[in-house]
Image 1 (tube, one colour):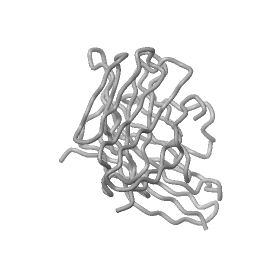
Image 2 (cartoon, one colour; image 1 turned 30 degrees about the horizontal axis):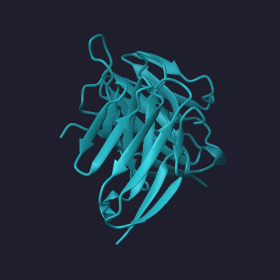
Image 3 (cartoon, one colour; image 1 turned 60 degrees about the horizontal axis):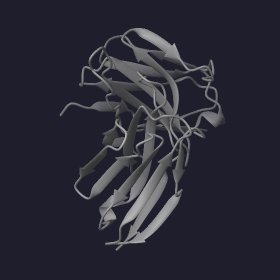
Length: 112
Length: 116
């Protein structure tokens, strides 16, 4: 969706390296969701962010929502081949809405 | 484990031959969604059920229909599939209501539809 831009579109990193994926909107992000998708499979929920400045971590993955609530980043520390997949951000662009708009995803490949 | 289950994982149909995809959930969520995802694209919402209320997206073709006979099951019917309907179809569920706040959607593994 053009309402939600993800960058980069694809990323190849060496195992052990850190990486960051960005998700940007011109509108306020009332809820921002990060998902991971393996090829040919469904979306796996990673994290949800709602408040400006919020940051959440799970294992080696950290997600942040900026103070203006228009940009989120997903950071992976010491990447592993198991991190490979497509990372999608989904956003609620209307307060109290339960319908999500998705970015087109970032395809991550981690080389052993 | 509570989950969202889609059947079949792969479906092949002929051009113009009706096809039905199914989704079931054990999460007891009140909202169920159907998305279409084409290669390297974002999932696109087709429609959703809020409890028994059907909500169609404005740009969803009439060729796509849905049924939700009970809380646990939801079906996607494609009346006359065209070559452009080949895609991954994803079912998702969420819990929505007063006091629930924002809740994530939970997805099934998808059904990949091919049209011959």
